[in-house]
Image (cartoon, rainbow, N blue to C red; front, top):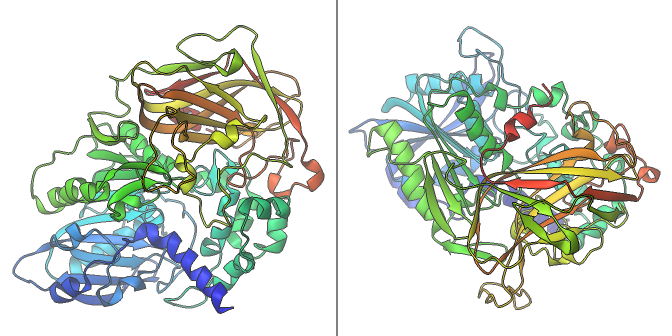
Length: 634
């Protein structure tokens, strides 16, 4: 059993590592330059939140407050072992504040995933609470009670703490001058546990972290035994393990029967009021603090969040002090420097995280919280993942990069800005019993998947249930900058289906191998995943009111992919793949329409012949109507 608990600990630390650095800040420096204090700060409803404060020992000047609110246990910051922010900020002269959010670890109250926002909650005599009011009350207390502060506050955080940083923007305390939501969750129907309404079965092991209430104040995990239900057998092949589980209802019966968050997911399969009121996007209006939104182009967990938080702020408040940074990172990768920046098999450069911390993050907080330096950050600081270099833009998406329309030709030909043959049809048999693997390699049970974001797609190209289209060898560089919208015309023999659309960079056959890769990874002909998305077809007209397909009837299905900035180099090819299973990253659609897939039976899963009709297109680059499409439940 000790080995099992060690295994659990490793995975738990892997998950919360998005909120920490690979190496803790120099504890000796912190011990000699900071005083540590702890407080239980009372909120407007009487609940007290555990808060640790590090105050500079040099009392000859005042300092701004830099705060991190987390559901991942601030106790790890104790005894000078600061997990965040970067060393540049720790050594830069700040009062550092860490707080357990309501219902987590040493804080009182009840935890609520993506607690709904209550507009107008800045009035002190109100008793209703949300994450914005808890942040407001905390800032108000800190400004009045922590000596040596200069009256200005900043907040930052990665992943869930990134969500709390975004929530702080709503009805913000006047002292809050700067916020950096990093890999922030914005809406759980599109981030993390769902993509476009499809369930991410690969997140099955993460539910214990968020689905059990603690019964006392604690600095230890209270959900470990629940995680052991899954991890006790340590399956070597996650694909086989998940396939053997069968329908999702078996997960309920075997593992998550007492998990309140899992049961909420099961009982709310559509984008109903439960999910809609938990989205932060509709509330991002009248933003006063400066905002530095940060994300990774290869973040499998929260890519939707940063892109759509930034775009929503820009749409609602064009004059807001808002900057977006997107770099070649997985989830939270910018918080730690590994020297050589690689994502799975692909190398992107050296010291990229250090560049962000030193040249973007620190100047942002220094300027707005200390009046130091000049604000030279562009509106969009974006990394081109094909050229492997930073680009600055006055707006995002940029208007000076021409969009491209792809269509599908015979013999697997991908056409650029030309029409496909009238009446063309491309069909495949999708079988939920033999789903397309999402990895090119065998892996065990994942906590949350990450490495596949640049994975080689040759394994999928070989399958008959994957449509593969590619261009001729490019005779010049082709850059895609902005949104991607696949507008498919489909028909099927079943009554429901998922659609996975992938944009792929095909390397030349003579591309040299990278030194960091195992010898069996051949880069010549590598089909690098650049962007993907899944769409659950039942939601084609409304996320809140799904409906079946009529067999054999051509039907429009729009698949919004997330933004990219990627240059396909001369000598490469551009590829698009389309298929209907991607397992166990995405759960299996039965392909026979049922009201609730979480409660589907084994006999509901059927084969279906799916046809993509030739008038289908993929529009790539520019400012497409993605936000409007996502509002189709209004």
